[in-house]
Amino acid sequence: MSLFRPVNSSESNLYTIRVSLGYGSNKGEFDTTTNPIVNDDVLCSNNSTNTVTIDHLASPTYNNLPKDFYIKYLEDSSYVSSFFVNYGKQFVAHPSINITAHSSEYVGNPVIIKNSLTSFTLYFIKSDGSYVGPSDDGVTGLLGFDLIITGPVKIGITTGNSNKGWALNDGSQQSPSNVYTYMDVNLGGGYTKNDSVVISKNLKLLNSTGGVITYTTSTATLDYTQTIWLIDGGISLTTLTPQTGMVLIITSTNTGYDTGTSSYTTNPTIVVDTDITINYQTLTTIEFSERGDSIILYADSNTNFVIISQSSNITIS
Image (cartoon, rainbow, N blue to C red; front, side):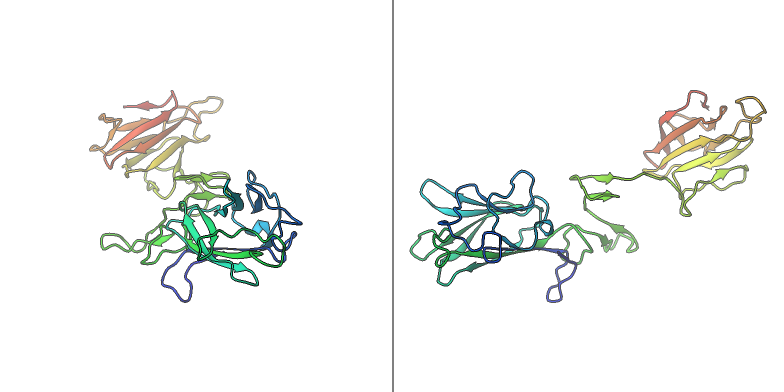
């Protein structure tokens, strides 16, 4: 569950994980006599590696837990009991953790050791320093516990307590109409990869109306709202100028040819501004001679295009 802005907090983008172990689960309360819990037993999981060994999850259902979430019981050679909790989600700052023990008697204070932004270890310790493990009779001692983890993640809008989600530029040097995010994004799917934009569906390079413009006259205005330009025969488009970071794919169309040949009646050309370079050279004209010819240009500055690839029939002079 994610809360973009809780009603009692100025902080945004809080993600909450809640778990109840023990009463109401398949195995019921912790009872090591009838349902032994031993070292490395996994009590609940939504993780393909650390699968459930003994099912003590009362709520929520497994598919409502984050992917890779699990709780593992640990017991060392001195019979010290602890619970390792893997969030299955990386918070951008340490989350708040609340533990409530299930018991008809005092079983000690929960002690939390935060290992990283992705996991913590839980102990129950009495005032005399002794460690408390799962109940051995299902009546007294630790019968289970409730767990609530709440912390900021990279999702949703961002307020003054920035946690790198979607946000409006708010600096004095930035336009407030621009939106940015530090999130790892998947377009068309649910899987994300760190420091990446993943595209899980067809990538379509279109203009704002969902099409691609074919330029058929010399007076046509070069359209910078799309990535692919189609040019027709017998034209000379002026003037092409780079914008830093821009990628252009320019392709010749199937019209404007002499009948029965693969050549244009008049070769279409694109003329570059005289103060612009191509591959850092003074080249001003891109000429297309065969149907389907294409060239990919990348603007590494506002004054130069780098040629990523081009058809052999294209002439640049």
